Amino acid sequence: MRNPAKFLQLKKQYDAFVERHPKFMRYMAYITDNCISEGAIMDVTVTDAEGKSIHGNAKLTAEDVAFLQEVRKLLGGDQ
Image (cartoon, rainbow, N blue to C red):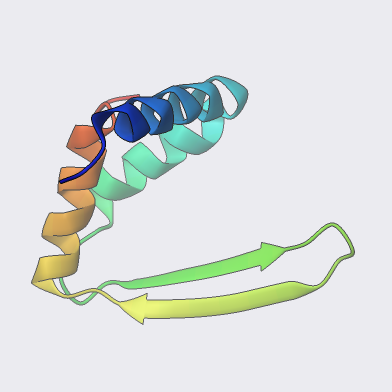
């Protein structure tokens, strides 16, 4: 069984992240509402503190879209 205390801790960390990065979360909400659909390609690049970039992408399936929508609902929806 999942530990409810861990979920509550994760929710607190998520809320703090939203507070620190409100524009990023609004951007993610926009993408979820307007760009995430089956066949869409999610393309991500992360640059570390030393300037090294790591890049990856994934073509979304219907199951991926449903999962991302459920995660958004679970974490607070319209943040």
